[in-house]
Length: 270
Image (cartoon, rainbow, N blue to C red; front, top):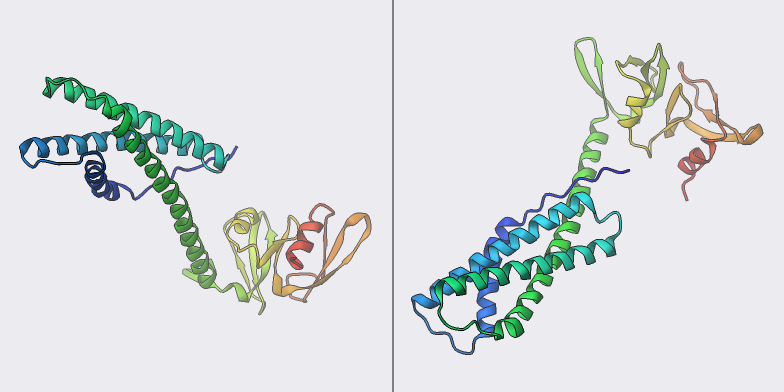
């Protein structure tokens, strides 16, 4: 099972500004006349406070859903689940707060128009809220993807880091012929050729290499694309990979039947 990490939304400053704006629009849509004075200011501030509480509850639900039911499992179901739950909870929070405030600060009958007009408008705003968070999700995903690409470019520019005596060297990928195994540790061989002994396994080395440039032929060797001349077919679905001659690599390395299709796709991508 994949372990998904919830996104970190940069949303707090946005909604601190957006909720008072939404409250202002609601007043404009709901009331034909608005009288200024302390009562209006007090009511407006209460509405903003209610909006913040409802938004915080919806935000907590969205972050929780990121953990237990991420978009990657089923996008349509996630969107429907998020929209329905947050809208229901958000409206419930607004209704309960409004009834409490009316009970505490008003002796007039509760206006039924709240359930026919106000709730409809507020419900639409919760749909807008969900649209914003869905957009933030994909924007954050895009930003993280771009950051990952920039990191990959940085790694490619730096090359592979090795220790040589007391020095830490960066060997450009273009100068690497490949990697072999010796006494359970990897050995980096350059095109010169020159060897650098690494204090790590070949499996660990493989995880650090750009897959479009390097291919692991078997348990003992990883080669750079520039070293591969071609391949020919062997018996039982196996292939023989043909390499440029170096002091470390033979001219022919057999590849198993299971790895042969992956090598062909890597060497001759569609």
